[in-house]
Length: 486
Image (cartoon, rainbow, N blue to C red; front, side, top):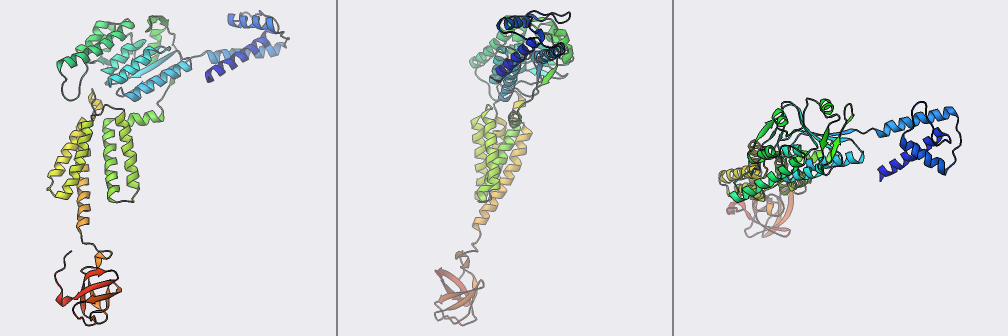
């Protein structure tokens, strides 16, 4: 809607400028240059409908200059550039989709995606491909800088692009579907392989590239250097820089997904960098499985501290925030719920260690379960999207030891003798202030209490408290004291 209002206002301004320039003549020449055909048509329509009054020559010159400024300003279209330097995941798909929508809204000439990725999730890859092939703005995928790769999911996105290019020293391929732990039966694995191979054939054939070789990247896990990919028609260009790529593309026709032919002239065209939003940056960071596991562990530890120190508030608040962040990140990732159960059982073992005093056996079991749960937490097809062993150990070992230590302190504190309130008086030693025969006054804990003794007690004699009965203490003389039981 905003774009339509802007275009309507622009047309109104241009129409007014034409009226000023033409000064009543429907067809007027400006120097040696003819007015554009669209402007002439507008002028003819205008002159036929409304009388145009003559304007001074200087004013018409100013109007002509202003019109030229408007035409040059609003007719320029940029190339929207985004950079993908991470695994392919839901946040990546959202970012690319939003960039394409912005390019369409601004009538940009093309979208340039500079990519370096080890691969990623199939669902996110399919979503990105759908956005690319449906884009009315041509999409250029460029694997850069040197040393970058379009591994696994990356080559699908590369082949789906209107223009596929690679920088020297890059590679693409190795797109065979994999599973993290365990191997599916042969039939299921064949189905997965055929499905991904069909996707590769579909996007490659529509772009007029080497279908058979692209399929071999899926079925045989083949990988190609930039020169091999160019020679075998998997990509369109090899270029060391963006401007060199635009220079090579200048005036050359490429095939769009709907079969239509198109040409781009991007030489010296301005590039407009497009960044992730703050939300996307945060999600991209916490969706690193290693970060997710650390956030989850910190949240669990903070909640434990809050449960053992009710009213502390700060640990509980931090714990809830971290747990919610971890849950949100895991919602977007392929999580194994059995691994979450293992992590939960690990915390139960840490708690049991303090209660049953197994001399470290339960703590060791909890550390092992927490480590395995961390390693198995994310069911990702590439190592970059899994929890690393060093991260799992760095989280599980300190967390296990700290949790078991805090649990043991809490249990020992509960077993200690009560030293406050009425129960704290039992077994305490006091002094008889008056003779107890059988009632009198005693002094204990800096206070005077009414006391009753079954054995006569002289003033100044020590007594031991046996029972608290309301505001009266039942005592015995220390000489006749029985062993005190807690």
